[in-house]
Image (cartoon, rainbow, N blue to C red; front, side, top):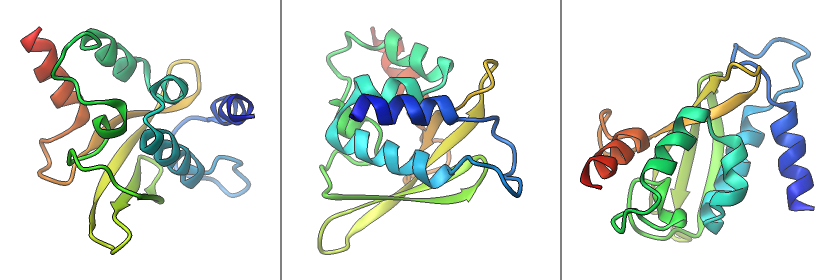
Amino acid sequence: MRLAILLSLAGSLVAAAPAVAGSAFNYDDLGAEFCRLTTAGDLADLRPLLSRQLGAALDRVAGNPSLPPPALLFQTYATPVANCAARTVNAALVQITRSQPDGTGWMDYIVIVPEPDGQTRIDDVLFALRRSDTLMSRLQSLAGQG
């Protein structure tokens, strides 16, 4: 069932242009699926939603012992959280709010890009700490250690 949902979502992704009236693409759904899969640490099912560039960066660091576990890799802090919610900011950014049951938490952003195959995928995560702190920059740093 989960695979069917993933395939359906991946198959319905369209170019990352501003949503047009009548457009079937829902960025909140992509963000919600990102939340579900990252909170569960399900990197295998998340892979089809990632851009080729981000997938390649993950491949380069796959054997690095410093790589955080999948449940923590896509978030600012190395603290497991109970809640994850998504809200579309625009056609290029989806806000990801991670929090504990008491409400303490933070916001990260996933960057959405069009791929050459016409699909829209997640290309990076902008972390809460500072503008230069991104998933891609962390992966590049880990690749340099290997």
